[in-house]
Each structure stands twice: as structure tokens, then as C-alpha cells.
Length: 99
Image 1 (spheres, rainbow, N blue to C red):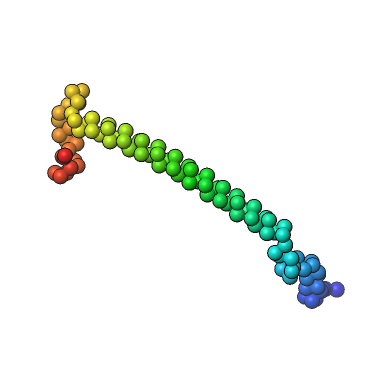
Image 2: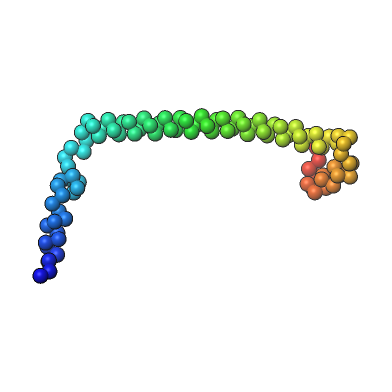
């Protein structure tokens, strides 16, 4: 003997009001407190991310200044470099690249 589709429907709908979304207590103090806790955690995560971004920005700024100093030392033509290498590198950058 086979079951009809209506028999399966009766079994699937007997889960209670919470399963169907019919609960009238969706805005209980417990769920409001939970929402506030989630919001507080989100703000803490956001603040932590902003701090990390600021630290990365400071690190990148420091790295940029070190790279600028290194580039300036190459362009200044220190005695340890061959003058031909400096001329070739300035030609590769183009005619308006020299300062």
C-alpha cells in the first residue's frame, strides 16, 4: 500500500510554529539582546580592522620613504656603480624621467 502526497504533507507540517516562522515572539528581549551583542561584535571587528589598516598604512609609508631614499642613491650615481648602468636605466624610463 502506498502513501498519498497528503500523508507526507501532514507529517511535514507538524513541526510546530517555530519551523513555519509563525512565532509571535521574534522580538523578545532575548533576541534583541542577541542582536545587540552581534552588533557590538561587528563594531569591535570593524574597529580592529581600522587599526590594522592604519598600521599597514604607516608601514607602507615607511617602506615608501626607504624606497625613495634607495632610488635617490641610485640616481645620485654613487662611486660603486658604473656610469653606463645609470645612463641606461635613465634611457629606459624615457626622456622626461630625469630630474
